Length: 98
Image 1 (cartoon, helix red, strand yellow):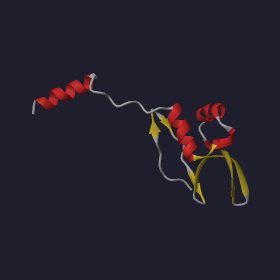
Image 2 (image 1 turned 180 degrees about the vertical axis):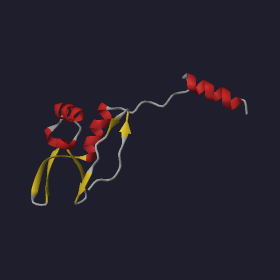
Image 3 (image 1 turned 30 degrees about the vertical axis):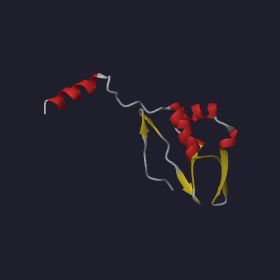
Image 4 (image 1 turned 120 degrees about the vertical axis):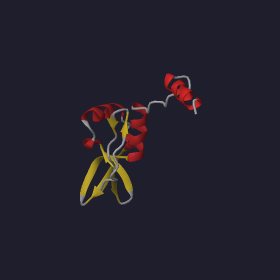
């Protein structure tokens, strides 16, 4: 079962999580190829968990929280424009006209 959410960060899509018996996880084999390669290269083997689902052992799972920690480290969210950037100066100008 999926949480039904799709997340986007810097053009890279985060994987959808699955839930089973209260555990939110992703399967490494379900990751997009580019993420899978990068993830496997940086994977801490202690993070891999096995889940018994419908008499089948899923041995390529990680907690979704661990995936998000990895994703955010490798795909940081761009910073919102600060007051020193030109867009802020334009907004200040427009607002001062009112």
